[in-house]
Length: 50
Image: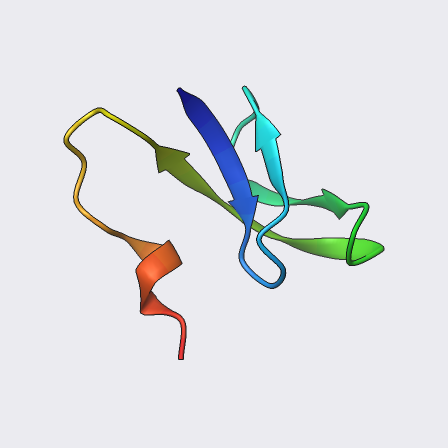
């Protein structure tokens, strides 16, 4: 399962490239990060929230 997740609100979109995109929930351009479930990947940007 490959999805990208909004770094600010957590809104997810399936099968797109990470980077800056329009988030309908935030209603602005924000950074989306890649999230791959069940692939053995280690936590990345998503888990670095303060």
